[in-house]
Length: 312
Image (cartoon, rainbow, N blue to C red):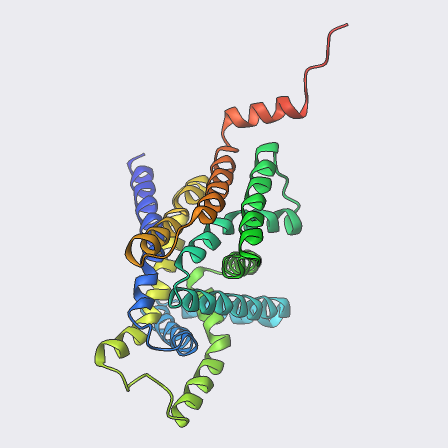
């Protein structure tokens, strides 16, 4: 019993801490805002790959890597899924870095608030998962919020939707590959590392690469992008295995909440009535969706779906 309690506490701490790290990650990218988003992305990919190689060696995971390689030979579809997931996470990383360093922190937080709903929608499409009445209502309310922002801005919140959709599709691809987070991230970065190296070499030949030209702190931060990427992911993978899925769902709102607070309080990004109404819709939708799995809400949903017939 004590072992189960300790495992639960560890899972809770690891998962919550991973989301806290993701929440404050914008502060990291802000420290190197003088470097272009493209170069930051290239360094993030390259150093993440090297860091994962070091971790695989330290934890003696190479036999498992060999098994995955054999599996790829037998299942070419796995290779395609890994390529797809690497492209999706690269898009997500680039948009996120660009948005953070161009004063769009609030919209990035909106994207990660919407992400759980996108994931559920993908589950409906690809795994035929069904929603109850409260979950359907949460989608309608969230849709109203996004539509309201779109009408008021005259355009779709591109950053938020790109982040939500790319990460949702990435999660779907990860679910289908069924690889551990460490090995999965290693192969994902392996796919795009050659592109990152070529890009960095081109920058160097053109004399436009900032790496090694800036101060030591900037160079170390660019190298550390690999650690900043991998550590939260590995903490999450370890923690999520120890706690119920609904608790993971509740904790996932830590990251966008921290990001939203950083954007509004620290960087003074405008939070107008439009953002307030949009976020209120999203928060209401998420609250409904989170509560939809409770017994009380399920009972009410059944009563609404199957109203009592009048006695004759």
